[in-house]
Image (cartoon, rainbow, N blue to C red; front, side, top):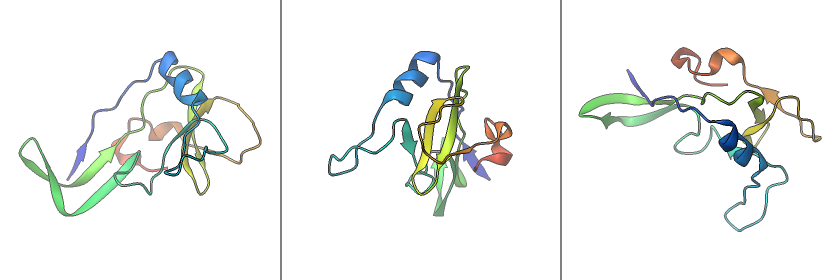
Length: 116
């Protein structure tokens, strides 16, 4: 059994702020694109399934791991996968030269479809 974190809802103001943000790496170098949210390879994962050796405990109950659901987004925004980087939020249809792959709509809020 996995602990499922509550799904968050991001309003238009938050989506716009995140989509315009340019992240920096640990040395302060800016990424070459805006809207970076994190990676499925991060620990803990940004979105998706994280399993632990020995499990984890939430509210006094033991779980094999955790699932972090994709948030509900304001209309006009989407989360996409940037190969070799991770997740990015952008306006739907945005094309600034990056190769990106959309996350299927049935992955949002569905614990059975928690990974892209």
